[in-house]
Length: 163
Image (tube, rainbow, N blue to C red; front, side, top):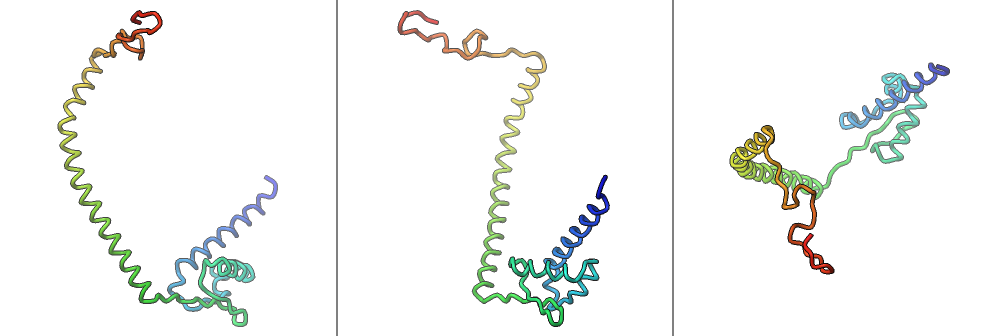
């Protein structure tokens, strides 16, 4: 295949860039600063590519940080929550817990009802399946097996005859 080496090299670089993004998303809580040279060495990428990738993440608001070009460091910003935000998060957690508990209770009640329905209707289903296996009769609705017609009592208004 022509250009196979170039495609593999480009694919490897894209994978390394996505690994760097994933690393930054998952580990920023543990750092206050990260050296760009450390990231470049760790992910085997040129430092210019690391700086460009980090800059684009900052620009797109995917990363709360700033680049210090003088020291070549990524300075991560801690987002502190106000007391109101902390209370809102706690309230959302409590509501989620209540919702889960209500769902469990409803499932328990519906599960009991479903089980009793299955026990009552289970015998009928078995009988129906047995009848079908034995070649049980097929019932039609008065059409004599000719499909779903108008029924045997239908009168034509123009002719006065039953069809």
